[in-house]
Image (cartoon, rainbow, N blue to C red; front, side, top):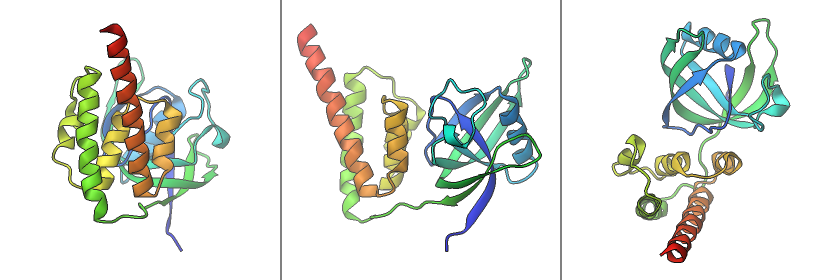
Length: 211
């Protein structure tokens, strides 16, 4: 029997958070701010889940994906306009089992931690090869190397490599969410490989046409 967690939930628009990712978020919705205020009183951990449609202002269970990321609030800053800037770090992939109503005007959920499946030493080499392919793609697409890209060079764990590349891929939200939901590590790395190959060939063809 897996242990379940009862945690406040923060819906996200247009971004998918992966484990080991550190990212700033700007939060303006009242329910979300209340959820953050609640977690700051305790262990600062919150479940971040992406909305299926970013246009929805007051999302309910059916507007949210079932997989999210248990995350830690590292910093919280109240801005003069009433919104909040938070720095969060993704920690664990979670599956939301149910949404829980409470009296406190913010979303709560019952979730379980989902660990990677199909981990083997064989994946180390494959994951390291992906770093090189992804760096080539970044150079081809003239992308600046951000902090997490620089960190990629020192990461050895295939799961962290997969999470880091996934968060930096320039793909639609639905595709990022699909990567988050792929718990089989080998399959996730294979999916990332095919996305990188596709993007690389598209850019190469465009360059030839322009060139």
